[in-house]
Length: 355
Image 1: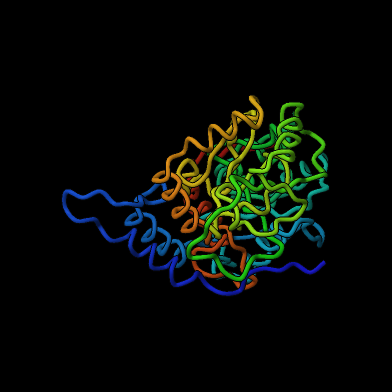
Image 2: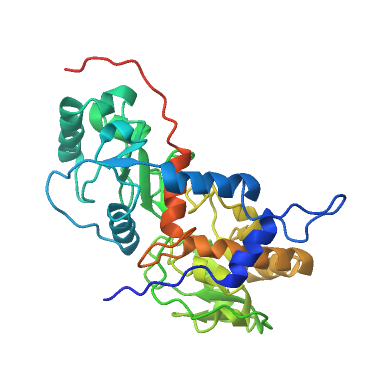
């Protein structure tokens, strides 16, 4: 099935909003809509621009030709191979990319790292801390020394959400999901006729009993709209997602001004763009316990000022979740690269000899 992706750069309205975030507020005034970013825009965007001109990555040749198996992995890999970030001179590289297929078991993965250690000097300088790899579900811990170093030291880029236990916060990254069919534009103003929309994912096998019960209650409540495919996010104030289910619509929901609500009974550490975007300012996280009544009380308790702030900041942040067929400034590919740029300061270990 052909993958549909946006091809146009960020809209004028989004660029104007970002420019307004870069403009310092007048003295003794508080901006109506604070930045959606962890870093002040006056720090973030100059550092991003520096990344686009200075960041260099050396990629090793894979042991055999292969293809990644998910749209976001494939798009990231293709964008990287055709980007200005690649260098053929490993001595000028900030990071080293280790490509291997998702079906690699412990033995061939260990052999791959062993060969890198013996054939190149770069792994031994940091024990892999200035290397990164792409793995759909992430790799698990293993007693093998080579795989363990890859797991603990190298930056893992996986698909969101990552298999439980295979993600190390503050080191690893996740790829924003690719939306299969984005809407042509976001409405400037909307009047929501539903409290919340939820995309019912029949493929989820790991729902807890409380999550299953909540979905069933929402199906019978006229304030919620439940469908197998979204019809119009603009009809709802909130868009509800079960963590672990189909989250490809999260970026699209934000783009059209529908505030995401992620329903989960556990802490989430693998959110896309977690180094850059303040998720607490653009999304709501609630547990499934208490049923639809508690959920409605919680969502209805969000005052209009907070809701409008989250909606506006979500629209601004949504451009970073867009995968363009030809990468555009500040899109998903470039922001994943920026997160790698933030991790380029690897600890340099003393060189040691290996058997």
